[in-house]
Image (cartoon, rainbow, N blue to C red; front, top):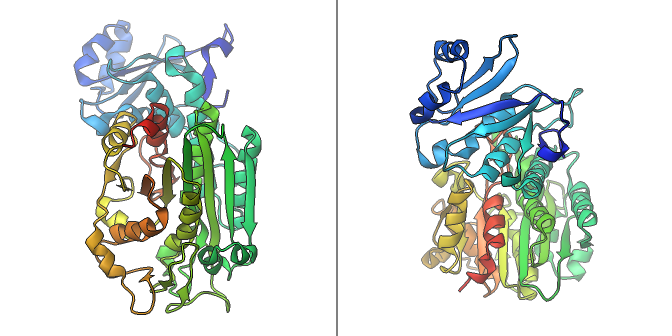
Length: 468
């Protein structure tokens, strides 16, 4: 199936397989009873107490690895969840492994997913591709779906990790085309000055200074009679900040500013691979926020597809501009649900840090079930308010609004800005970071897809029926 997964049925009979035993401290004695006396002494001598992440390679009489002992730690919710298994996907040597035992309340599909998440390596520019350990997928791990989810996550991470020189507007458009071709979806695009004639002036303004033209890409898939789901992703392939230029530290990882588009492509891949019964429209608002003589300026007033005018307070608040036109277009199709993903605000990181995304919704009905999906699948996010009084912070004396306000409640005011373009149908906004500053169990350092697994499972479990 892949370097990091193989189905049980595809494993050769003579293939050596290493058992992995995962236990909590209160299950340590039961695990030790499965070992020979020398192995038991070996494990104890190595100080194995089943603490979270603790790993011991237990030898056989020849000195080869007989099994792996892995600590799950004490029961502690998300902190000691199935995602810890990503450590094994990251660190174990080449070979075939099976989960022989694990905490009784762990989900086997999530355990396998965590292994695959941890096994990710961005190797595009390496001379030698590392070979990850291979997990044997058993029937209870929902092999096909698990593999499809992990593949989508890996693809999304690859999009984000690829430098902007190789993942500009043309290349991101091409990635969407490749995905559409894989699943028989249709793909269309409005490119360059056609954005003006087709009335997408804010996307055009943000991207017109770059050497590759801005564009709105639309992917369509599924039965036209099925419930209609629209996804919108911010695809700023590199963000200099524009004329309000970022400093060196702020600009260093701005290849990730197309992370919202990567999230949409990853979620769309999960949906199409699973054949969910939806009519999917995915929109990518793609541009590079570059600096040239033609760059848009602070103080400019832009028109929008919605008909609203926007005064530019800060050219580094460009993501909400491209999203505004794309959200307007998506809402014109009257979807049952509209979801956008964007690496939108530094304020979201100040409020919740890099790994917990703020989530906004203009309907209360789906919030509880969606948050529960995040908890169940260890893909968390946090519900934030669309606090209408803060819209006053975006008041402009010369336009309908401005694109940035004071230093207060930046994630909320950005969401309120988007709400003006999202229409009246149910709408959700995820302000993702799209990046792991440091590595953790199932999350290698670098590009990351956040919240998409939770949304996928919520949709699979009938989320579109929980909107009212």
